[in-house]
Image 1 (cartoon, rainbow over the protein chains, first blue to last red):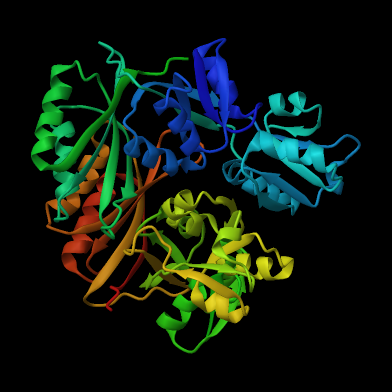
Image 2 (cartoon, one colour; image 1 turned 180 degrees about the vertical axis):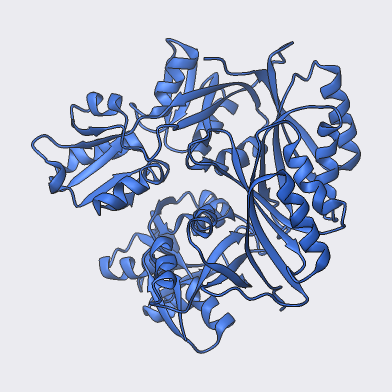
Length: 270
Length: 270
């Protein structure tokens, strides 16, 4: 089995692939676009896409890509993220003038960097920032990435666990070409649009509330070409095989202009 | 009057400041953090913060900064965004290997860049990307920014209106130290948290639906330190001076763990 992830070898996403799928072959992709395309074209069997971080929020691009591609969510995984401040050997913390990393990682260490008075510069990847730093040999720059990335590139760890908040988890969605619908202990992800009239979202949510269906996430994204109208993404507890869930979605289809099930998949268990 | 904006001179945000506030002095800020701080400290009288784009979605950092600072939303403005592909003189479109700009601008031209097969690289600012390109003198790089920025730096415009969708508007919020509550034709922005129990968001939205109050936006952001719990930001039509709006917020306070009014301000009119 071959699984795509976004980033360089050593990325948090690659670690998540090994934790979730086990000992599989990985395909590093330079962007989320390329990652989704690799599954569609059959270059890989699945992809593991980060969808939300407990500190920095949703990764909206992957919401957009779920909509744009005809793929299915087949699972979810939660990764505990522990960031390291990484430098070339011999460098001390006081030497650091600038830190490079992925915007998401920089955002998760924003208070730590503000306190140190270090400037942040965005690069495309966490593990990639370590690779760039090693190649440049810079002695006044640090990178933020995983311990695994530091080890992979033979770099020095100046400090471990520099994220602003220990409750730092990233939720990943496994995406494949074939839908899988578990019988129980499932989550279902849907996306829909509504008529732009007062109270429409309230009505849409009533189909779940009236049936005691628990919603774990609601996310809105702009509807292209219709300023200030939205796509709504909802995650709910329950399987598509469940009669109550099916009735709720049937009820929602009375209000929704568009409604699509992105996947029904086993809930993550530690 | 002095008004802060994020970016270099020539930024879309600076244009929005002039359109909204008229002929005022501007204070360019290197980040949204610095921009908010400049109003708090009295270095400027107000700031104009981009909060949402009709193609790329919300600028979540500014939602977080509204919460972190004790400032008030005092107005809103809609800017029609028209991106230009900008290069040093003598450069032709076929020479371009890479495009630099702010992630938001790159996102808004993503399909255009995909079609041209040009690589995108993120920099901190649209107008800043033009400044960087001029300084580097590179002949295989282009920047994406406003016509105004191209003119300000004396650069060549290769193509105008390269955004993927003509319906490209950015909504800005004017932020100041003193609250202003208009009597009519107002919007009110609030932020709240709820107990993490099934149906809680549905109940919260019922306080508006039951009173026929129109919601124009709902946005969720992660609650720091409580993974998979959320802050909800809602914009509603109506003034805080309106009795029905006040009753709805009073009703919401029965369910909300935290509730704060970010501002009640005149609606944008073309």
